[in-house]
Length: 282
Ligand SMILES: Nc1ncnc2c1ncn2[C@@H]1O[C@H](COP(=O)(O)OP(=O)(O)OP(=O)(O)O)[C@@H](O)[C@H]1O
Ligand SMILES: [Mg+2]
Image (tube, rainbow, N blue to C red; front, side, top):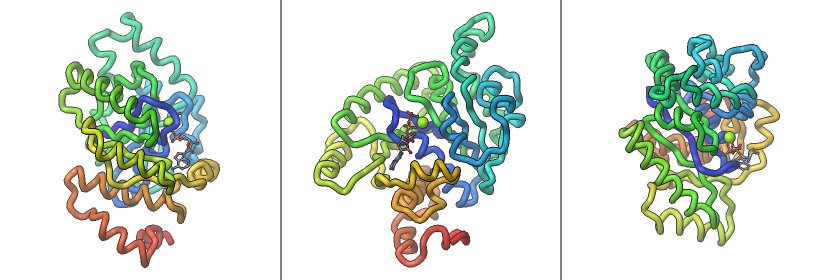
């Protein structure tokens, strides 16, 4: 199982949209995928039509406290191959547990998620972690558990500061808890077809060498907030951001060494046959 943390130092940059849609495309491609919602607001969870009452069903909170086995917290999303460990408000209290040495020994507090995910590693090809922007124990757990990180960002004036901050944060993670952590790249989200946006994207793609950047960007698209209301990933719609997430996932797979996921081939196919039809759902 390859574990990928979707993380960034700022809020509202498209982390959850990236986690949900990348997970859906990976599942559509036949991979077995586990998405773990690590946000107490449960935004990733809200993207699916989950029939469970999350106030009583085990979530990421019980996974971290040890009150539930990972298998007990897993929910089938209704999308073939895509499972979810959900989150809800009580996850906001997890830091009280993780920072309390009487409840959780200090030496293991950052490794609990990694440890729990070990138990399901043979059941999944990919585990995606939807992180919060805050620097707390939840994120420390995510970055200790991950093999890779993807960094969704908005190409604007603040992006460089965000990337510099992240380079320090990730360097510290590599020095302390997870030396093998690898950055797959920055993914520019909410892209717009304007000269200013293009200038920022070009400058941040070619003018910085802090992190690699994905060629694919995700366009700003009204279907993304709408998809949440329909509790269906946007990749299951015919829309620009949906197509972008499919192409992004292909680029991600190529970066991970999977040979059959050429973005050029996908784009040629999409000219004639939208992704849904391509996957038998059109
Ligand atoms: N490509 C897009 N086009 C238009 N709206 C988008 C796009 N991506 C995300 N959004 C919207 O922007 C808002 C923030 O997106 P999202 O929740 O994915 O960000 P986030 O980084 O996970 O935020 P947080 O830090 O609060 O968890 C949401 O309302 C989402 O629907
Ligand atoms: Mg989010």
